[in-house]
Image 1 (cartoon, helix red, strand yellow):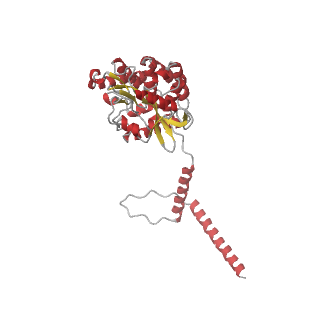
Image 2: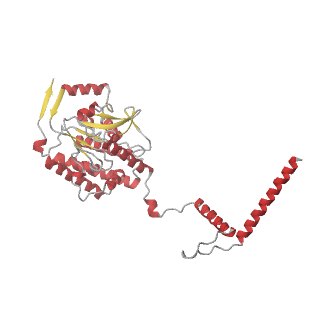
Image 3: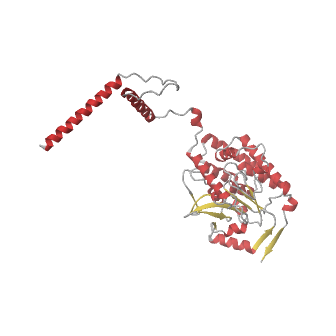
Length: 390
């Protein structure tokens, strides 16, 4: 009996609810759109009627439906400005490197850098023996060594700097060198004995290949092919003990790895390419192997590594002041007028610029080195070498 009465009550309520909904629907369909509101001088309008509320309800539904519709495609000019994931990865990596640089990790004296827990030396038996031999027969020089920063495809800037330093006698066959990423490549080029103009022409060939076929994911293979053709077979002999290549080794945290002993030309090329390995940009993988170690670009931990000289002149292809760097010898800050913006430089570091821009970068590097030389003339900077034996 109770169940029957409850069922009847529910049915009655359901009928009342349906009747009210039908009444609401009929009233809203016959309603006229609301009139415009009167001027502010008139008294406030009366409360909204049921028909007005229905019209507002419909308007809200229309707006909700519009929000569910897909957004129109952006104009062609906006779509063309979108960057690939690889380029965004490169920009992120450069930004992280800049944060490490701002932390002051690259401006400490050489001895302090070498004692850091975060910097490793190769521990192969042949490397340990080579270091012992170097200590027994060491060339002591008061002349500075030169360290070239990570720079991406701003490589021509470093070429221009190196050309001036070679022309004026700052860099000789015995001058200690160090570099990270593009800076490591320039060290190998200097040690190879090739001219900077020849290297600039090879850079243009690489840039043209990347402009026509793409840069991201294939730059590593193109770069390796170019270096194998351009560098001499005895490259490792020329580089051993003279150049230091900075690499970031991945373990439980990134650590800087310095390499200055090489087994072959291929070993040198592998080292400088590993030093240039921006994850997801140089090749479609997050890291690479170097001597059975998982590694990435050296610029993350050693943006401008120390040389073996008692004094190191650091060379940065980016405006040092904008990166918050101190103690940088040669950079675009030496001659900042009529230069590219930092944003343009970052873009050119990741995507190859046109040949005329590459020529300009070379000229700017040469000019900036000349400005530095005005304050550091060769006669007071380059000292005589002294051979010390135990």
